[in-house]
Image 1 (cartoon, one colour):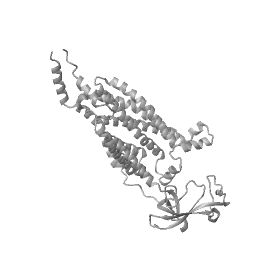
Image 2 (tube, helix red, strand yellow):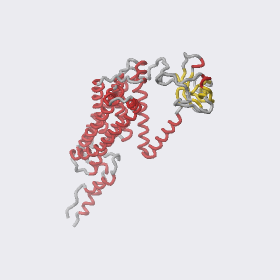
Image 3 (spheres, helix red, strand yellow):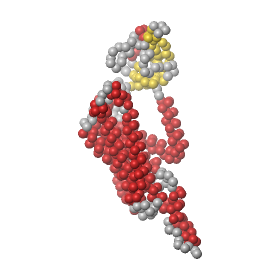
Image 4 (cartoon, one colour):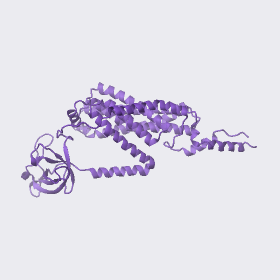
Length: 444
């Protein structure tokens, strides 16, 4: 009786225990670990050196201009709201055109009624101070008694005009939504979800403590973005997916794709003469910190914005190749690549569509303005505001598309070159048991 194939029983064990793409990764040989470490350790060291060299130590101080977000603000609360005749408070609505439009008229009384709100400052040195805020009946934001608001403080204005309501306090609904999100992630992802939240918190720490202050201090935005994105990538991937060869391959694939995005972004932002200074917010930044390279800031935004989606693509492709190899250890690198790229094509279609729609949704008000103006498609696309989004979307999408074959090829080569075989994670006892079984089955 011919004994069965040597690897038949371990293969069945592998197929039974590895049924999803993000399960535990099989260990690889010491040789492959050394090769991967030879690539990643210098990169991680360069990121660490960059963090130390560019560390800003906080955002630089400046005198507030009182414009836009650069205003002194405090918390406030609406104490009371009463209806008054708009003429009594000398209220008029000034639209964008600058023409004065009388407030809407109350048909029952024939009067134009406005809301006269009494607002109390609840934080800062003037806590307890009250002021009057008049709200037009057609204003987009109406006030109600007991509502929390954000008040702007203008120290150079007359005493009665120093405070004004600038926005509504939205902290509670935002915190509640964040809590629901965190709970959902933990309930579904369990320990992986907890680690994902930890990685998210650390990523925001890198963004707020390093990237933003370093750019404000005058460091090159592109260099800061590359170092910061490298730190976020290493933190997020290794915390979420473990310190394994499979994760390391995803890191290398992400790094190569980010380099491509940086090169293409730098080329086309310069070629299209995009200044990065296209709206009130970027204009305010340029006015406060004229030394900041706004086009470099635009490129930094492209790199950081693409990083999150790249992580997903590279991890998924690497995991797919690993699982294919574990399901069929006889597959060659070429066969693994072909099978993995078929999975990647489906991923490309969904991810690119997601990225384009995300940018289009963010620019929807702008697109509506062009639609109202009945501008041609060519005119709309040629405007700097829209051209920025086009370059941002297409450069990021090219990087995403390129990450699929690059990462799939890397994973196929690495897992095929593994000298230990993909059955190593079954443990040393499995081959011994299967060997005894073969000897028993070999008896006539």
